[in-house]
Every structure is written in C-alpha cells, then in structure tokens.
Amino acid sequence: MDRRNFIKSSTLIGVVPMLSSFKITSSVIKPNALKSGALVGVISPSSSISELQYKKLLENFGVLGLKLVQSTHLRAHNGFLAGTDEQRIEDLHAMYQNPKISAIICARGGYGATRLLDQIDYSIIAAHPKPLIGYSDITALLLAFYKNCGHVGFHGPVGVSTFNEYTLSHFNAVLTNGEKIKLAPNTPNIIVPGKASGRLIGGNLSLLVSMIGTRHDPSWKDHILFIEEVSESTYRIDRMLTQLRSSGKLRGVKGIALGNFTKGDTLPGDPNFKYSIALNEVFHDRLGDLGIPVLAGFSFGHEEDNATLPIGILASLDTETSQLALLESAVKH
Image (cartoon, rainbow, N blue to C red; front, top):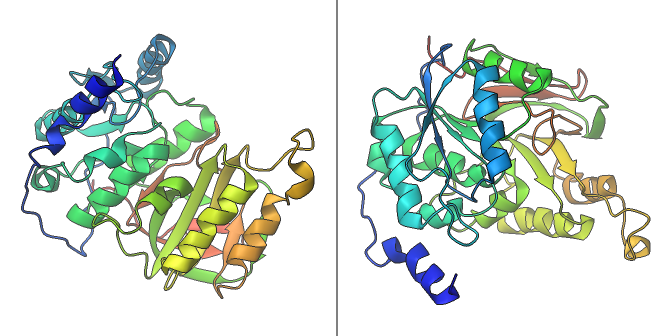
C-alpha cells in the first residue's frame, strides 16, 4: 500500500473532528451482568487479526457460551491498523447503539486505539453503558470511557486470547456472577509492605504513559493502580516508571499491584545483559520509596493466565495476605 494513501485514509476522520458534548463525571456506572447466551459484539479498534486469529476467535465464543456479533469492519486491514480510523469508530459506535448487544469485546490489542480518542462521540458511549472488555492497547479505551463517561471497564482477555480455566473462571466470576474476587500471586513478591483500598485503575504500562497529558487521562488519586507489560526491555520499563513519577501521576495513588511483565528481563544471551539489571530491582528502585504498598506477581496481562479486573470498582490491596480483592460487584443484576 502507498504510504501516502494509507496515512490519508487513516486520518481522514481527523480532518473534520467529530465534536461531541460530554460531561466528565466522577460517578461510576456499572453495566448489567453478562448472561449466558447473550449477544456480544466483537470489534477491532487497534491492529487487524489474521486468519488463524479469526478462527480462534470463533472457537472462543463456543467456549464462552456467548453469541458472536461481528462488526462490519472486524477483519479490515489498513497498514498497521484494522481499517481506517473512520471504519473503526463506526464499528464502535454501532455496537454501543445496537440495543441487542449486551457487551463488547475487542478482538485483539496491538496499536491504534489512541488514534480514536479525540474522534469518539462520548455521548453515544455514555448513553449505552455496556461492558467493554480487552487489555493491552485497549487500555486507552477503558481509561477514556472511565474518564469521560464514568463507565466501569473490564481489563481482561481479548477475543483471540487463550481462555484456559484460570482466565475463563475469572471472566465469568466478574462479568457474569458479579463476584468479589480475590487475586493472589503465585509467588508473592512484596516490594513495599502495607494495606490500602481504593478504586481500581490501570492497564498496560506503555498505554498508561501514552495517555499522560491528554484530556482522556483520568485522575489516579485515591486509586489502586495495576500495571502489566510485554516485550519491553528492563531499561524501557525503568524509563516509563520514571515518567509516571516525574509527571506526578503516582501522587495520591493508594497502592500498586504488578501483574505479568512478560519478556521483560534482559536474558543472559542478550549482548546487553551485562549492562542490565533484574526487573525486580527496577520495581524496588522506582516504586519502593512512594510510601504505599506495592505487591508484584499477579496473573493479569500478557500471559495465558489473565484475570479480569474492573476499572472503577472499589478494591483492597494487602501484602500481609498477598491479596488484591474486589470490595463490591462490578456489574448490576
């Protein structure tokens, strides 16, 4: 594809910005619980899915016991994006406006969600509270909808994820049963001891950093922050955590839960190994002096074991019991 045409088609919607009048709210709006057999819309707001991923998506819906409704441009491909910005926003709006759709799950992450944030009509989203489910690049949408609409968002598996017993059980517990789940690390790693409570907020570290300075970035004050990352070198994680410190985003945060940091440590075979340090040292150095509890080792993020965490829901973090626990249901029954 000609690069000039790709950029032009991808940003066409940005030529005439979609203006929407929405009110930033501090209230939290819970969606209805997800019922077995419900119609669930699938969208691709970030990168495109391959043929193999599409087949896995179809298989997953059989496991989930949900009925799949594909967005118009689900399998679109436009350079490194799953269709143009206009196509992806059209699919997003359509799923929220469709009264038959009970929830929306993103097909995958990748890149592209942040391009949409200034163009989304948040009055459409606010008028139709539905569970939006995904992680990685989808962090941007979850945070924007929380900030601009007060919606609880669900940081959990995408359509092409592996729904093993752990991931599926937590998905159903949070979204279907409304359980106050308790997460415990397989191997508790206490960076800073202590107890804290507050509303959950967080997601992928790269996206958390990229949201800073935008009008779609919610306050983290009085929240428990959860963070995960994938395929980022130790020094890059150090740099991003430093950005969180320097920007002031960590001021007022009550506690921090660290999930999967897949492929984060520099391995002995890497030529840069002798210049690196262990990821755990970075956690202690960048987060150890904040005066709040920090607990690492939770199973959420870029691994097959990926627990669903609801953004905006009250939770507690306790290093003594090694638990991150929801204090209220994330859905309405």
